[in-house]
Amino acid sequence: MEHLNHQVLRTDASGMPLEWIDYQEAVKLYSLGHVAYAVGTLLYTIHGGINALTGLRSAIEVNSIVATYSRHFAIQKINRHYVPPLNNRTLFKRDNYICLYCGERFLHRDLSRDHVTPLSIGGTDSWSNVVTACKRCNNHKAGATPEKAGMQLLAIPFVPTHAEYVYLQGRKVLSDQMEFLRAHFPRTSPLHERLS
Image (cartoon, rainbow, N blue to C red; front, side, top):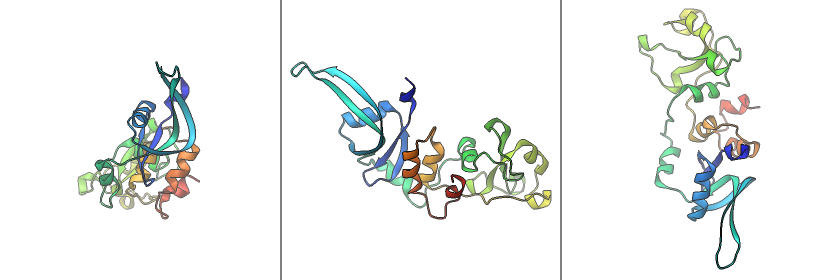
């Protein structure tokens, strides 16, 4: 069924976004009593077996956002020093699939990761030194800095917070989930403008 593909946003009991989970994990959290409350759109109702005593069939309703009683790993992900793992899928989404040199929007397959300060001259493979670039611009820039290649960088790379990273990991983020996540982005987040 199509709707079972929707991801559920899991938060801690205070509402801090933690991760995306599938419907099976959400049902498991409900059945184990780990759900503090649920908000957002009702995504689906999962039916279970029939109770032998009452003759009633069990059902669990799963909303788009479920708040759960925290586990210890969640605290580590939201502290100030947490740096999310870097991969091209989330990098390209961070930069809105736009080459930060020519300003054109591209499909994922036509993009590449560019190191603003190239690795060959001491740059790092980190959020603050990488941007999305089309393959043509990346090849033109080659092993030079933007200045030496005569190219202007259109935006400054940034390290996403955990809430921003949760958004970047999402597939088909629903409007209520997006609104919830945006409320947790820093006020100065470049994602506010990119998502408008």
